Length: 373
Image 1 (tube, rainbow, N blue to C red):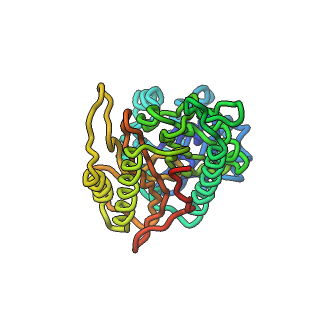
Image 2 (spheres, rainbow, N blue to C red):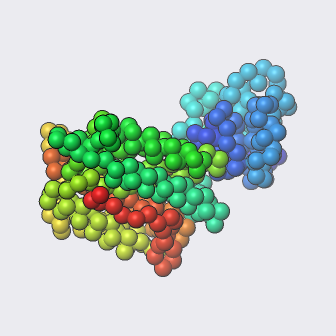
Image 3 (cartoon, rainbow, N blue to C red):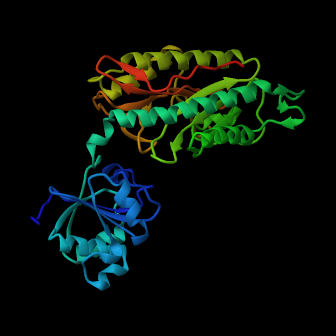
């Protein structure tokens, strides 16, 4: 085998490392070793995973760690296995991802292997989704939409008591109950809800607060559903903000501004447009509606995150719709999710998942908008 400075080495569990899953089509909770050269792809797995890996891995030579043709002493650790594989393939220079395990890197370097840390993304082609990938992401997004509808139906049944706490009969409706309903609907569709957000009132001012406790009438409730499919591993992402009962005038203004920013950002999306321009459009629209960023007791308020991000085998991947002027490409799958966050007034985020096209964009799985229910 010719020595190649372009060889790629990755070590870890494919379920936690989307690049390995993308390169091989194989998912497992235990660590594997992946080596890619100009001539072949090699996947080293535990013996118990050998047959499954050979069935599921695509265009990859699959070897069992226990039978790898290297010295027995090297088989005692992942670092030793990786070193033995590189020696067996006569490779002395490899590219590794920025999050490559330090202990393994040090072992390889002591043995004379030169490591080059690759500039992300390691596989740029991961950003542009194939037709098959789009179908898988759309499947997850439909699951998110069904779960969102179930949550809205649950909230619509609730009635406020004298303290404006929502109740289902005598039972207080909590963020935990709504989240459990969402996650059950997702499981029925072979999807896992990981970190589903149901955040009401002041809790929603923290964009990634999961939410807890009783939900109240008249307050905004941010529901963010981002399921991962249990079989193929792709994700969906969907957010709606609702109020059970009558929203305050301030909340109405915030919602109108966010919806306007959402529409303006979507109108900018098409292949060739800078991701930064989409973000700037959303931010400018919110400013035009009178909403500025500020701090309250050290907590940021206003539009305090990027307008969106890529979605695929990771819930957050490139491209990012923030300050970087990355050109959008046909086949990018991105969220568009402007939001406003005010602890005293209320918080609103609206998010859709779309695929970029040459002429604009199209939704992967449309979901109706809710506000007052």
